[in-house]
Length: 223
Ligand SMILES: Nc1ncnc2c1ncn2[C@@H]1O[C@H](COP(=O)(O)OP(=O)(O)OP(=O)(O)O)[C@@H](O)[C@H]1O
Ligand SMILES: [Mg+2]
Image (cartoon, rainbow, N blue to C red):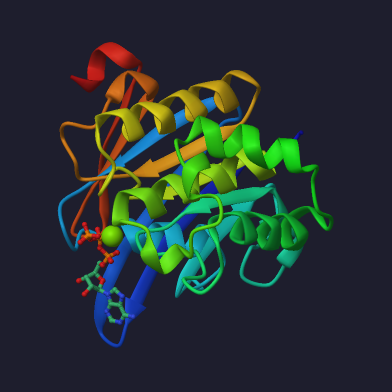
């Protein structure tokens, strides 16, 4: 695809008089995995909400595959995401959540074996028919990873995806990110967890009080 997956051009976001993002500019490439770092309240989730088209910049522009995600829902069709809140239905089973999501995202149900493979990979096969409200927090996060595996998005947006995941769960997510990025996807992962498995990232962008303060390229810079 010709257009960059994600571009921020001089984005400022204000709520009332409070400036949350201050003139943020960066662009991401296909086949790349970026770590968005910053302390609590620095503006990471606000950056992510802009990419998902959930909020509109006060000034500046956000483009996803060259389109404005706030106005253009087709910009969002490439995006798969894991947010910092539950994105699963507590009253449906693990499998039915995946079926519902597949119908929504790709417009049809997959073969039963496809769901079984994905549930096995994230360690939830035994819980296939369990209601999601009975799953633990880490298990729900694994179900979010399963959603990524089912829909194979070309742009992956994750907000604090490592919270609640144990070491094995974090490794499953990192393997999925590596696999998708190797196949050409763009991944953007916000986390303040300094112990996250960071060999997956090829650049790190850091924000402080809404300002982009550093951008480090290549793996050796990340330690
Ligand atoms: N809807 C809103 N109205 C007013 N202020 C908001 C709103 N959403 C976020 N903020 C403020 O924006 C700032 C950045 O919040 P944001 O959620 O982006 O931080 P974050 O870096 O994701 O933090 P954390 O690490 O805790 O997830 C905070 O000061 C927060 O209070
Ligand atoms: Mg946040």
